[in-house]
Image (cartoon, rainbow, N blue to C red; front, side, top):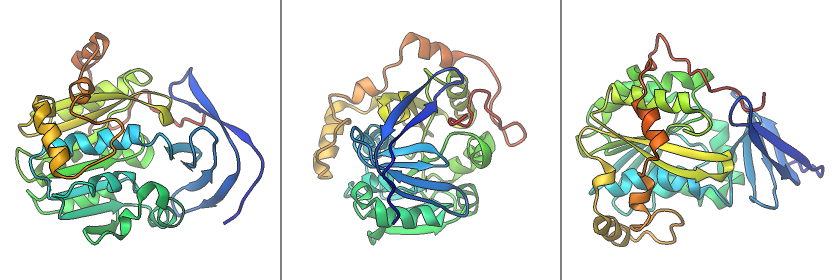
Length: 310
């Protein structure tokens, strides 16, 4: 492991005309995989921070703001999630949270970049808690879309897509064509598909288009919202299902499932916070009601996503 002593500012745009910054300390590692640059830095405020291609991916002290809603909303909304697929999420944070549910029997983990997982196993064990070594986990180093398309139908209780923003190679995982394959792979109408759906504040067009695209495939699509510090803005998640709306799960059921599954020390998700996660401000309701194109394999581009470094 190489260590560098210089400090610097990381500046990232979350829209074309605004952004945020933070100061780093020691650079613990800097290198390359077959697919991307990878860097690990120390920060006083956020702890160890992982960057891929220069863009912030995960911050040790605040990652729960992203991983908890991504995982526990669909997992707790489901009565007994046994088999789970995670697409992406090479740092292992989402995997760690899935494995906290005692109902889980198998997690299939599909990640394109083998080197990121190897790096996370060695350098990010404090974040993933050794989740990759759990006997319930089967790891596949492959393209996530290809993995879903070749999977058997009616297989998964939960599918979690923990991907980068919709640009470049990831674009084909944000299309209606792919979502149709996802829906076929879900076990039944009790099952859920979850993904982040960008920031309604910083990237409203991308947010609207993701939800429109999901609604063209799934009968039920529910947004969930929270501030995610490591992305510098208000963030959103989309939970899709054949029939079930996670917002309709009673708070006492959520409390019971947290206790029954022996899930402790959650920082964001609770039976009290559950209804608040789904509250939509009027401007978000307007964005969700807006008409416009959906994302397809023939037209996958998103108008307000871009390289945050530029």
